[in-house]
Image (tube, rainbow, N blue to C red; front, top):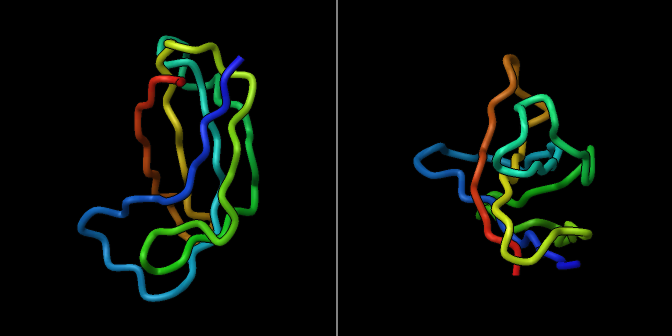
Length: 88
């Protein structure tokens, strides 16, 4: 089993004026969109995108592809940041 450590969120061109609180989830890339697994429902992200506390995603299968999703808990409707990783 592998662990992936999330240390930052790349908000791209979005302007982030203050610390954001959001939910971090992951799923196997080939799984349905409803199959996200909760990592932490209260992740704090600084304005530069770094996580206040890095988050460990454990139990991954090495070499498998996963989607990692961060959703801002303050937005309505929710805004998502999704990236695809290959487990180490």
